[in-house]
Length: 386
Ligand SMILES: [Zn+2]
Image (cartoon, rainbow, N blue to C red):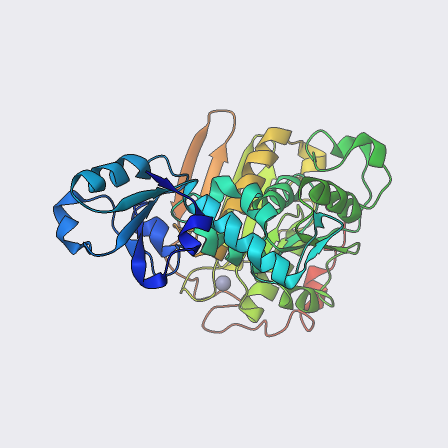
């Protein structure tokens, strides 16, 4: 027997309880207030009160229907919630929205509230039903701020997927303009936007994909003098640049500011990714690579080439690392580097279990105390992010 959210609201509070049958992890990441977590385990049926109506729900109301039916056969006054948790979420978010009046001209624009709108519940449905995300996780993403340095081969997929996932505020730093030779891999840009600043071009695509987010553009190079100010505003940084000076600048700034970030590098058919989180006693990028290579000693993509799909895969891994960090789920690539060879599809995880005690920014005798004071080392960082 079915019951709607509106019908439940007409019942007296003492008259019923909600039974959440989606499983413990899903319950932990968002559930109907005061709902009882009971994963359809009939060996625990004694725990259920006989004197109340039981409103049984799952994600969409399909899996819970036979459970409600079985409970009725066991003598309980059980109902299946039509449309499940999703329908309830749409109902309460639309009520809140009417109260907050964030709706303008029928279009739901980005709101500064931490609550989800009904449009957002529909949009993010496929990730809200993931037990590890839930409505609480989606709200966390909405509150989060990620800064992407470079709207190139890595930044393009990272920016699009983070925009799609509903990360509430995304910053993009890039001083360059779109050129036709970028488009083989930088698929956030378009042929028509040749000559447009890359940060602005990226913003256009991101908002076309998802108008519920806010995109801040910084059409400038990253220098020792602007890095700290830019990074301070954000929860997570993505290194999507292709020159070593900027990679070391991003690393040193993040270590000194205690900001988590995800490094990636790509060349020809190969890519590598690692994540740094300051709370853990994990190595930073400088712990592993120590010093900026001599200019010209290591080829870059404009000299040695790159397959666009390799940049796409690695940039997507960076977006995934950011999402996992923001949600506090899964295992990050901290203390280890994922190395992919796209020609053989050989993917290895190389472990770096501890800090390098000689690291100049996080080691025992670190001498880099400020990126501004160390600015000469990053000269050349302003060279184009390809
Ligand atoms: Zn270090």
